[in-house]
Image 1 (cartoon, helix red, strand yellow):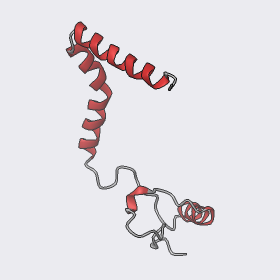
Image 2 (cartoon, helix red, strand yellow):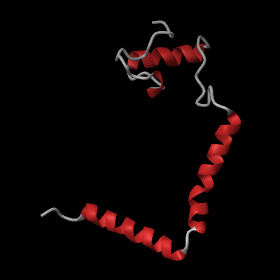
Image 3 (spheres, helix red, strand yellow):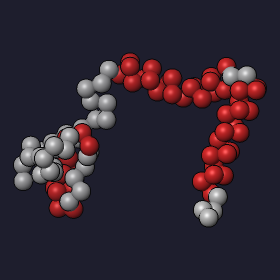
Length: 95
């Protein structure tokens, strides 16, 4: 098998949807090829601007805390009540 061949034969499926082959023999071949240095393992940040990745991650880490600090106590209470009602509505027995 050539490493350049598509992993999945399904038409219309984007290449980015699977990072590893699902077939055990193809996965084993990929692991051996990476271990022997025949091919390089793809980085998850390949093709992305490292500075943008860092900024996005930093923003995601502080997002919830910053939003909670910005909201008034009354608004936080409204959001909490709505969430609780949604949780209980999902658990309610259907009659």
